[in-house]
Each structure stands twice: as structure tokens, then as C-alpha cells.
Amino acid sequence: MAPLMKSSTTAKILKTLGMFGSVQAVGMSCSIIRTKLAALWLGPMGVGLMTIYNSTMELLAQTSQLNIGQSSVRDLSLKRDSNAGPVTVAVTRRLSLFLGLAGLVAVVLFSPLISEWAFGDTGHAWAFAVLSLMMLTIALTNAEFAVMRAYDKLGALAKTSLYTALTSIALAVPLLYFLRLKAIVPILLVYFGTNCIYALIFRVRGIPQVSISLKEAWKQGGSMLRLGTYMTISTTVTLLASNLFVIYLNRVYGQDSVGIYQAGYTLINTYVGIIFNAIAMEYYPRLSLVGAHRMRTEIVVSHEIKVTMWVLMPVAIAFVCCSGLVVKLLYSPEFEATVPYVAVGATGVFFRAASWCLAYTILARGDGRTFIFTELSSATVYLALHIPIFNAFGFKGLGVAYLLWYGIYFGVVYAVYRWRYKLRLRRGIGILLASAIVLACATLALNSFISPWLTLAILLPPSLYATYKHLR
Image 1: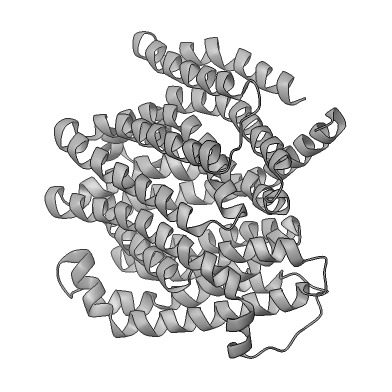
Image 2: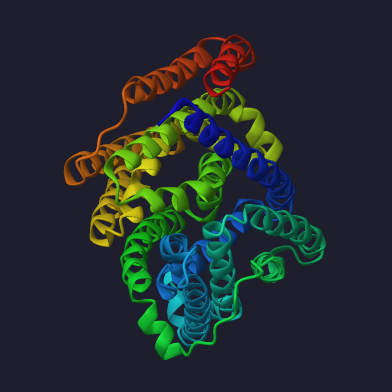
């Protein structure tokens, strides 16, 4: 890739990161308020209950919708500039509507069984029956998001996220205050409902409308349905593993442990994941366009890893040093047990970022069976590490489990990338990844011997300068 092209691509990545980072910063602020109020007014038990509802519904949504929201991005990107573009958009929307309605009906019918599986009794069947509306709203939202990403309408996607965050927090605060535990179900419906409404308001305009029957949509969408089915199996396995661990904690250690675990998991995955989500908005469609070309794929993947590593370095340092303060600000003293989990787990975000960039190569090539293999391996390693390590060391050991988990997963996806696809990472990527992990571990070690603020003052400025220098 010529220097000018690299600069242009880097600029686009950073522009996307800046736009979505800013929007998600607003969303994070709203989430901070919501989480803080939930922690104070509901306690760990309430946070744990919300976690079980949300994770269970996400699992059901992924299972019933065949991951059309992700698999369609590849087809939409490849066909957007051809005559087949409007047809592909119509197929995506029609299939999403049908699958969303089917999922809604299924959750209502089987809500007692879902409650029995998640809680060990049928006392929460009514809640799951009401939450079945999420199946439809998630399906419609994901369809519109897929079209926005494929057609490079990221501004509309950013507006949707921004207005959803502001509207949902404005409605969630009074609900929490007046209803307390009874507010959990309405809050989830409010968030996903407003997200769907804004996604429909800001949907991509100007695409010729195509009338298509469900039968024809099912036929035309064969490739995205096949890939989506493979992705659904893979994602379901991943969510199932996470859900099983949450249920295990709930039944063995109680809902308080679930709430504390979710607090740490949210800090590591959701907040750091803002960077991953922002970059993925343009990375996956761009990678899909070059997926059939070996050299172009190598350049795009290596460049993405490089940019992500440099952006994450100062973020990881800040997370390690400020984990205690962040937990106090976002939650309550009851959640302090999650601090070691967050601090140690932050060192694993580099493995997560690199493996994430490599894994998208599998999707860009439409290789669903291989994706199942990698995600099944990930879920197996997750459970094999988290349950015994938590039993032995409690929350202090979960950070190590997180680091080992993504370290092993990186090895799996790199093996696929290198030996199945015969692709290589560009020179310097391995050294950069190793340096980033060493820096994070050094931060963790130094943080144990001197104050977090002194560690931050020593390591953060040079890290910010290095990031600016290499991305400038």
C-alpha cells in the first residue's frame, strides 16, 4: 500500500473512531449514570437480575435471527454499486422482519421454559414474555444498521446511537427512582425500542424500493442466510458460554456475585469495546471488498491491527491505573471486589484486538464453518478457564483467566489466518503486539509497587506521544 493510501486509510479509521468514540462517550456517560443509579438503588442483586434478563434475551435474539445483521453486511457491501444493490437491501429488511416476528412469538410461547432454564423456576416467565418485544426491535434495528454500514452512512448510524443514549437515559432515571426492581424490564424495553425507532428514522434513503415476497427473499438471501446460520451457531455458542457462567455464579454464589462479575466484564469489554466497535463500522465492509485478494487482505488486516494497537496502548495504561477509581465512580463500595479483575484483564485487550482483526477475515471470506470452529474453541477455553480459576481465586483470578482466554484465542485465529488462508502479517506487527503486552504488564507491576497516579504520570504521557507520532 502506497504511503498516501495508508495515510488516507488511517485518517478514515481515526475519523470513524473519533465520530463513534464521541457518540459512544455520550452513551457511556448515560450508561455511567444508569449503572450508578442501578448500583445505588438496586444493589448487586438488581444489577445481577438485569444482567440475566439482558444476556438471555441477547442469546435468544442471536439464535432466532440467524445473525442477518452481520452476515448481510458482506453481501450489501459487495453489491451496493450494482443493480443488485436495492434487491439485497429489500431482502435484508424482509428477512429481518420475518425472523424478528418469529422470535417474538417463540419467546412468548416458551417463556416458562426460558425462566426455568435461567432461574431454575417459572417465576420470571411473565418478564420474558414482555421482553419478547426485544426480538422484533433488535431484528429491525440490526437490518438498518447493516445497510448503513455497507453504504458508508456512518453519520446516520452515529446519530441513531446518540439519540438512543439520550432518550433512554431520560426515561430510565424516573423509572429506576419510582419502580426500583420493577423498572428492570421497562428499562430494557425502552432502550431497545428507542434504538429501533431512531434506526428507522435515520434509515438510508435514496435506495430504489423493491417489492419482494418472503419466498423470493428467502431464495435471494441464500448466501447471507448460510453465513448467518454459521455465525448464529458461533455467536450462540459464545453467548451460551457467557450465559452458563452467569447462571453458574447465580446458582452457586448468588446474584450479588453475578452483579460484581458483570460490573468488571462491562468495564473491560463494553467500555474498551467502544474502540473495537467504532473501528469495525468501516473495517468489516472494507475488508469484505478485498477478501478475495491475498495481498490486499494482508495489507488491510495488518494496518488495522497496527492502528488498533497504538490507540489501545494509552487506554490500557489508564484502565490499569484508574480501575479502582472507575469502579468507585460507576458503582458502589460493594463492587470493589471487581477491581483486580479489571486491572489484570486490561492487559488482555491487546490479544483481543489482534484476534478480533484476524477473525473478521474469516467472515469477509464467507467461511462460516471455520468461524464456528474458532468461536467454539473460544467458548470452550472461556468456560475451562473461568470456572476453575474463579473457584480457586475468586474475582482476583478472573483477570488472569481473561488474559489467558484471549491469548489462546489469538493463537487459534492466527493459525487459521496463516495456514488455512496462507496469509501473513506484515513486518513489525508481532513486535508491536509483544511490546503492547509488555507495556501493559509493566504498568500492572509498577502499579502494585507505587501509587496508581504516579504510575499514570510516568507511563501515560510517553505512551500518548508515541501513539500520536505513529498515527500522525
